[in-house]
Image (tube, rainbow, N blue to C red):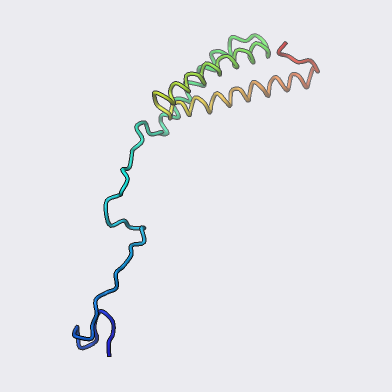
Amino acid sequence: MTYGWQGGPEGTGPGAFPPPPRTPSGLFPSNAPIRPSYREPYPITGSGVAVGALVAFAWLLLFGLFGRNIAGYAWWTLLAGALAWAAAAVLVRHGDRGVATGVAIVTAGGWSIAAALVAMRWAQTGDWPLW
């Protein structure tokens, strides 16, 4: 009786046959990859995002302090945010994308705070505060 490619209890012999060819699943590649793999030249790190967030926070705070009222605060924050996003766009293209991510996140938050203050003043007085 033949027990497969391992042979039977009597060992390998004329009844044994070689193992069938096995197709790899691809889960564990047996050869080198066909295509080259590339590494990120500027990987995003948590410290880079934190530095960008702190710098953007200080930048928006500095410009926000120039405003004497809600309208002034909103316009200065809008200007500072536009400049910060321009700097973030340059950083995304030519520099550290982690710092650019932190700048963009904090700038969006600063704009949201300015918009909420303008909307709150508008709701309280019924007069649009930016004109």
